[in-house]
Image (tube, rainbow, N blue to C red; front, side, top):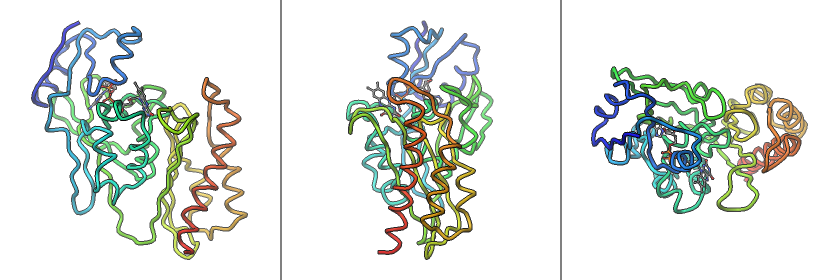
Length: 286
Ligand SMILES: Cc1cc2nc3c(=O)[nH]c(=O)nc-3n(C[C@H](O)[C@H](O)[C@H](O)COP(=O)(O)OP(=O)(O)OC[C@H]3O[C@@H](n4cnc5c(N)ncnc54)[C@H](O)[C@@H]3O)c2cc1C
């Protein structure tokens, strides 16, 4: 296997587009190294991104936060900008893996690996983030995150394309609330059994707009679009919350695996929704 460690993005893109057989990008390596050891991947070339310092940043703009693809989960977890403008992403970063993993793991790697349980995906779905990609011919795309995942470990990224940055819109309305829960088999160092992120524009219990991001309940991280539709433009009442919980059970498509049964995940989707919506609406009343 050939190994490259470019210093500049231009060279990475050249290598990706240069017909180096099956080339594999490696960022933090927390997925790639176990996959290489387990022989579940056998690339002809490894392109190490770890010296591309230009893609490791968290920048605050007027309307959005921009995160370079090589920003580590630890940098996200300790960032005041993320805590202020995307608290659910901050919470998810703080709960991903363990300190060693968070120091190496990157946001670009978490999204590109496309695990159904990828912890940064549900908050980014709820925050309506966009993924900026670039390819060997310098063609850039802004992909809405709900169109990025195709299946377990599959994304819409082409062979010569990579994630450059992630854009998280800032919100200005004081009526927007967010909340996040990750349910694992223990409190730290656990892959999600199910995770949920909520973004809601709610005033006096009236929901103007809502986005629900879910992890580990379908072949990819998903938005619960049908449930969102049930709440949008409505007064949030106990009956509506109950009805939404039932709708969510139908909307998710979980599997049974070593961590939990499909039935449990379905049930917990409904329970977590109730907890999150009660958490944000309770804040409203306080
Ligand atoms: C002990 C342990 C615990 C873990 N716990 C969690 C957890 O709790 N939650 C969780 O979500 N994950 C967890 N993971 C998985 C992993 O740490 C994360 O998915 C991590 O964010 C991957 O990032 P990375 O930089 O290490 O990716 P890498 O392993 O370097 O790459 C992962 C994939 O992304 C591709 N890639 C990397 N960067 C780019 C880019 N810029 N553009 C396009 N493709 C790219 C690579 O080619 C590869 O396919 C855990 C892993 C370990 C080993």
